[in-house]
Structure formats: C-alpha cells, structure tokens
Image (cartoon, rainbow, N blue to C red; front, side):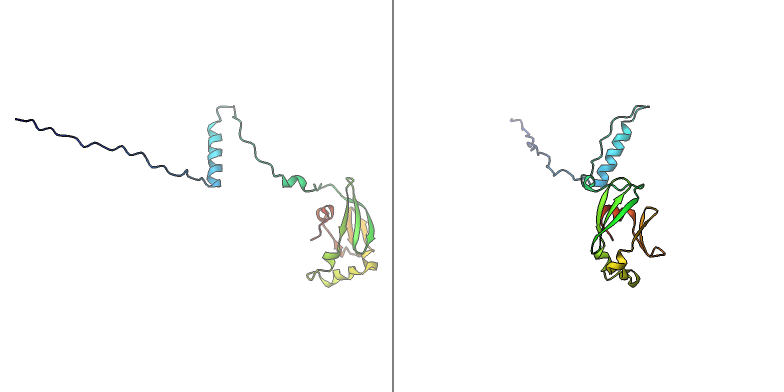
Length: 148
C-alpha cells in the first residue's frame, strides 16, 4: 500500500506595502522638537537646541530707536521736509499723499497750502503744526519716511 503524502501549500511571501512617508503638519513638528528637547534635559545640563532661523527681511528694515527725537526740520519743496534726528539719522518725508487723501479731515487739508505747510515747528522733539498741535505724526513714521 502506498502511503498518502500530504503536501502543504506553499505560502507565498508577500512584501509589505510601501506607503508614502507621512507628512507632519508644522505645528506638530514644532511640538515634537520641543518634546525632544525636553527629553534631552538631564539634571542641570541642558543639551543644545536648534537655533531659530532669522528673518532676512528684518535686516533691510531701518531701525527705529525709541529715544530718537527730531532736532531740526527744513522745508525742501511742495510738501517735502528734511528731518534730522537726535541719533544723526536724516530722512526726507513727503506729506503730499497724506494731505490729499480722501479720508483726510478738512481741518488738516488746509495744510496743503504751502504757506500753511511751512508753519511747522519742532517742539519737544516732535514735528507739529498749529497753535494747539493740530497736526503731528508718530516718530516711527517720520523716521522711516512713510506717513500713514
């Protein structure tokens, strides 16, 4: 008699499916970096952390010093003044767009006339027009030369 031979089915080896790497949202990535940094702290020794990237656009912006005051102002032409600040910085400022804007109130629009515009004064480091300081601007705007 013949012995019956049972054959096992050959199992196919299937390679695991390859999936695309999972993208981590920026917030989650930041949290993971902070969490990893906390784990690196042992006792009083703090492991080095990655440095923050500096914004290169901020290098091109002029610095505004809180202690900068206007020393001198000189009328150049039309609605343009040359301002000298206490830190040595000089800036030409054009007030034409501000004075001729539709949103400018009527009591300020009277300074469009050259005679009235020339009546500015420098008081306590500020550039002012009028007896009761009708018109004045923040030092930051004058320092950068952009009037809003």
